[in-house]
Length: 358
Image: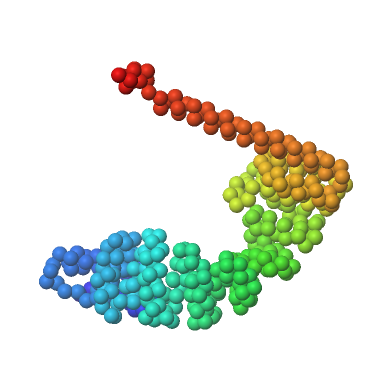
């Protein structure tokens, strides 16, 4: 019998060596064909499990599931089989099935770290944020030193808008905050949600290493504006717009250039009232596709804007409203024309009408 360098239990599964691994996988698949084809050839649950994992490594999940289900009948390999059946369900995006396997393990072994971690992450996928939070909360009691689990727990708390608790979790990993980019950004966003001025420094630290991210720089500029650091905010807006205008700039799906331009124009109009650049930028924003009439109207009523510029903003609002009305009219005319064409196509020919009348 081939000796398999593969260990499976309720805690961890490891494969050793690339060459040895592929030799083992193909050897196990050969054994699988023997076990499947020869009724008299017996195999142990451990061998069933090893064959299932070999198929898993090759991405042959249907075959892997078949052998792992066999292995799951024995106590020795039951937990490991259920865990990896959950992994297969997760990989194939059957998240409800996956969570049943992981939480099934937790019913028998509530402190199983692998199952807790998998169940928590899968609950995020199913949208059960509160259940995910409970799993992460217990997980961090068992392995409090895990920065990755701490990050995921804080991310769930952030999604639940429990910003104070998210900050509390993140601050347990101050050492990791210096080096972990994801942790630092989440910390900055959490501080921002809590309206803490310290968020400015945290954003700045993150951007030092991730300067090309326009979405985060836009958040940073808005934060600076909120805390009345107008000169720095204007500089950030200019940087984002300059990067967007460059020939090498790629389209950013998360933010529209016209939205950034509007924010820039709004700040110019409220912070530098004697400067006409704000109106020019506002007109450019509208020409680039900015269409939030309500926001422009709100700005037009802002007493921080000079009287002359408020008049100009009124003209911009009027033009936006006329453009919106023309757009709606065109949509209506197009819909009516299509309906008329469909009616003509659906009508019966005259010969059929005559035949039907007889």
